[in-house]
Length: 175
Image (tube, rainbow, N blue to C red; front, side, top):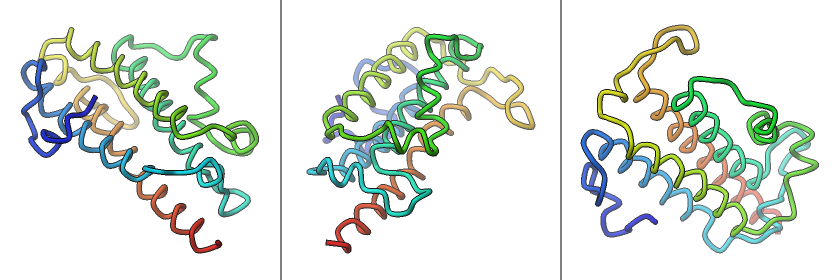
């Protein structure tokens, strides 16, 4: 759970050790603002499709959880998805199948999904030494640290949170 009184204090996290304080405090702020962006959202808003090839807010929230789960697999286990985990592809790739299948759920569903993945992330972070953040491996077109990879997780969320805000405005303007 994010402590709203500490959300603006980068580096001051209860029970978090070392350099992970900075990373987690930034992730907490981003998540706090994402949750604020969907405050009091209806199922109609979550499922609103502003264009035939667009994404709904529900799809974007699912995508955020799927990206974080994917980075758990990539950085914590250094592997690809197994057969059981392929269910996450729908949220990662989005597209037509996601438009058909990711709908009809309320905000609590998406918040629980985001929270459960985040809890696993933080539990694993708490077992790792600070040096892990600076470990490098091949990533995209170059080498990257684990710190960058996890920065990308919340940077992706920031991007999609902006889309969520725009979609909510489009939904409200059609009413």
